[in-house]
Image 1 (cartoon, rainbow, N blue to C red):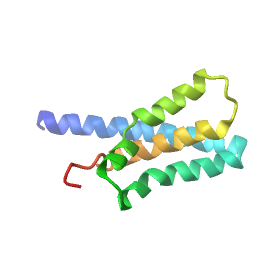
Image 2: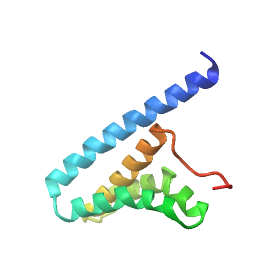
Image 3: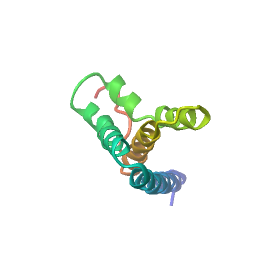
Image 4: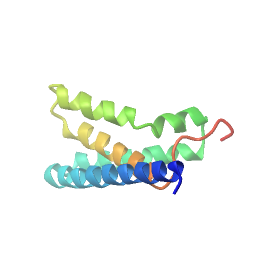
Length: 112
């Protein structure tokens, strides 16, 4: 195995673990709070994928960066906001990003 192969396998393993954790936590939160949490989870799990169908590559790239959903999760956790659908939206988005990276999808190139 080359160093690149090992790095790629380690990266995919990390993304798989993150996706599994986020999915389990998302299922817990949606089961616990239901309603609006389910709606925000479905919307924010599908919205990053919808950027594939049009618009500039920049929008697609932003939707596939893990830093934005991470900022949503951390921001919600340290704020006094008590509306759980914001947190489940961040979890759903992070789950999507981790699953996409696991399967080899990520930011598009400048060519599209």
